[in-house]
Amino acid sequence: MKRNKIALAATSGLVGLSVFAGSLAYASTGSDAKDAEELQQFLSANPEVAAVVKDVETKTGGKVVEAEFDDETEAKGIVEFEIMMADGSEQEVLYTLADGSMTVDVDEDDDGDHDGEADDDGENEADDDK
Image 1 (cartoon, rainbow, N blue to C red):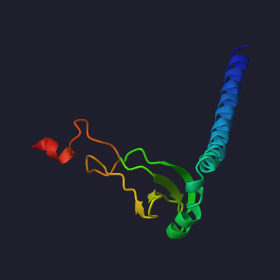
Image 2: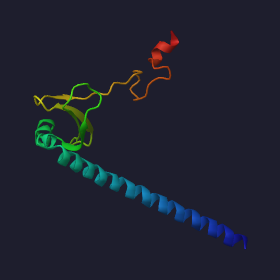
Image 3: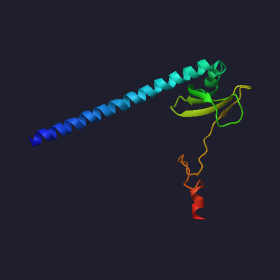
Image 4: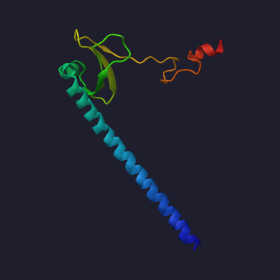
């Protein structure tokens, strides 16, 4: 009887892990499809942006995977493109629709330790010792 309970528990655990792993695999492939669908919807709703995608891809040498109007700048008509480079890295580019200029969007690391996270007090960790 005790062996049956152990076998049942082990089987249930393995089935649960299999379902979990399968859902992770599905989620990773589903998110790429969802991103592509969102990009197409954005480009369809904004033909002026769709018209410059090829130009952005040509200038960067990558593939546009996401696009949205930049909400961090006060100027209007600036589009933030996320570009997948040939080496698998991602690059963000800001494109000004009015003049066709492009700049690489660099995320600044507030605490200077290059981990992408700010220090608890919003200052550089090196300043904490002072």
